Amino acid sequence: MPWQAAQREASEEAGVSGAIETEPVTSYAYSKGKQGREDIVAAYLMLVESERKPDEPEREPRWFTPDDATKRLGKGREKKYAREHQRVINEALTRLR
Image (cartoon, rainbow, N blue to C red):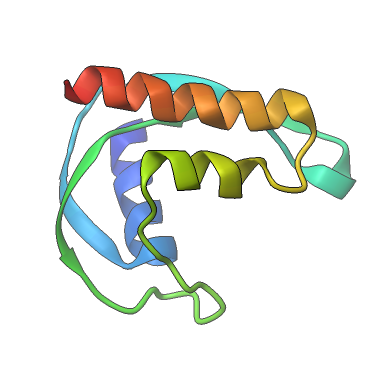
């Protein structure tokens, strides 16, 4: 199931676990950068219940406010992909309200 893959990725890359919705809140275009490929990624909401060190040692996850996350995710990206990240954050906030 796709939501289980998202849950596994959250654990491996961010070291978080918790309850995850089984339907995506939205999907978005994501650039593979130098590979010149664009993927469509489903975004799922998770209620984080525990945190630990990520499985991938180069990862250093941190929490940001929505505004700061939008700025950080937009930095150094093509405008199209910066807008996509902003849209995901906005849709998640709308869903959480």
